[in-house]
Length: 214
Image (cartoon, rainbow, N blue to C red; front, side):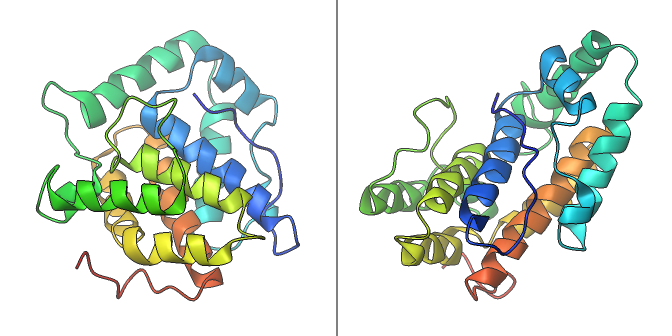
């Protein structure tokens, strides 16, 4: 799983690096549930300070995540519970959610999957080298946004293009995750995904509410 970040989010010149860490975090916890060691890191403060985050779902998500972590007495038991929840939500055999862009475009593993692969090739990025999921899986697309955040100072149009073409479905995914998750942890992750993508899209003047999968 990706390591957590404790870097504050702001609009200073290092914002791209800061956002990259937050994207890596949500990519990691959607790909794999946190380990006991990761939960211990959360408890030790390896999460952003909510006061440093923009008001709204991004801040709310990390407030909830800190509250959840501080309430954990047995990290091994908590990790096992999150593994069961992760399996129920995302793995199955009949997962509650299909967190793929193509699913939200009503063409599961069809043309939208090919389109995002084409976007990766066009941008020269390989976000899924350490991930087993399909290219249009939320964890992979969020990993792509982490890569693009790292280089947004030199190539801001690349990130704007990705958010314009592939950011449209994350608010709906976040809402589904909030409605379906039983654990406070994954409910908070839904808030974080929602707030993070919206915040970043606003920076690039991309309206994810009005963008369609077409």
